[in-house]
Amino acid sequence: MLSLMSNKFVVNNIKILSSWGYNLPCNTDCTICRVSLNTNSLYYQDKGIDSYVVEGTCGHSFHYECIKPWAEKNKTCPICFANWNYKNKPDEPTKSSKIVKNSNSASSNGW
Ligand SMILES: [Zn+2]
Ligand SMILES: [Zn+2]
Image (cartoon, rainbow, N blue to C red):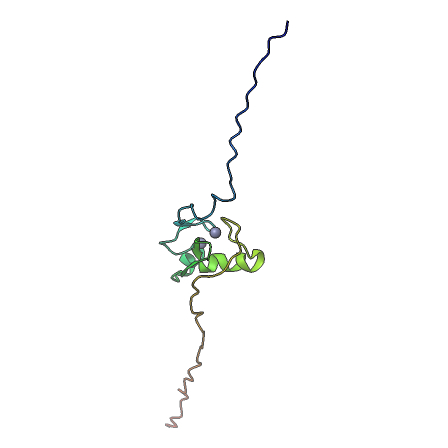
């Protein structure tokens, strides 16, 4: 005689799609260079430049110089893969390097 085994599968149907995303705590580290957003990015630490932290519309933040090349290629957030749109953007430093003419030509005609 076969004993009837009651294989009861209780499937918890968790709706993942509706619970992801905004529940995530805002990241405090830049996932691209793995440095805290409170400090300058690895690239800028090298150069001694202050990083600008930008936020995407998905709520994740990165160093601007880190997300910029990523976003240009992938157009998505590297954490949640939502479409990447800048919430804030730094003013691009306009490098207007003025060439200061050093007219220091010695015209002294001493003899
Ligand atoms: Zn970074
Ligand atoms: Zn994101």
